[in-house]
Image (cartoon, rainbow, N blue to C red; front, side, top):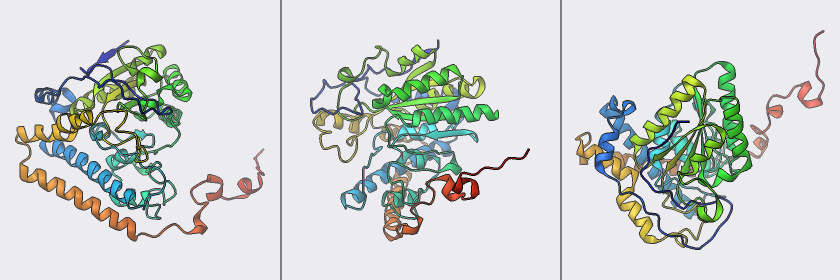
Length: 389
């Protein structure tokens, strides 16, 4: 079994998606980030041939995600977004690093914290913001909202609101790739709180049993809703991903504060999926600055303000990566400011676009819901099927 722990973090107290508590846990003690780590990881095989433009592109993408999420928060606070809003602020290196490796036959499916993955695969801020407001110009025509972004043309199969519900679907996408003989994989993202769901373990079992090219990626942001790992989950000392041992599956723990480390670890899993049709379970350590959702009013009660501030000041993936680019002379302060301003302007324009977009027509309420409705014929409307002799 190839089990690698590339993170130098100690295992965190993690959260259950389904139990909430305001009891503060002991602050997590982790290794302070080191600039030398990014320099070293930039020289790893998957990263060493990146051009300066590609590296700058990663920064641009991470900044776009953050500014979009920040603008979404303001829109929510203005009362224009119904339902939940799960923000990705602090986790930008994960979606950016993983999606940067996608090829023609690689696919993505995720849970309800899905904005960053959508932007990462190439969705526009306009269609993403419009979806948040339930407008007809949204990526799901205003019927999905925050948790249900979709872009099948970009191999992006959504946002799913049921905890762990996307994990068997991820296995299904991988099965389809294998069935069709395509060299690709499905990256299936989930939160750390979903690891105890039965559907997740059933999915791991089938993926291992049938050798499916699926990569399950636990975005371990430390506090999935509000209950510590020690009170909700039993797991090996090596981390959540070590549960893969029970399914004879390869696994790895990755430091998500480094974009280069994310690319390195995910690349190994993709090579395994592409060349051996084998699944992998990855656990990527990251951190969210906001609550589980914006409705999570207790997110500063089950962790300290000092901990949040420490991550913002010393461990932020965008700050760490930006400083690497500055130190290496790849960007200047002027270009850095330009990238940030462009992202702010784009996010602001998307909010205006969403405001001015129309709501869906009532007559379209059943469109794009059931295949049989959109493809109405005698067999689907009456149940009568005819077969040739």
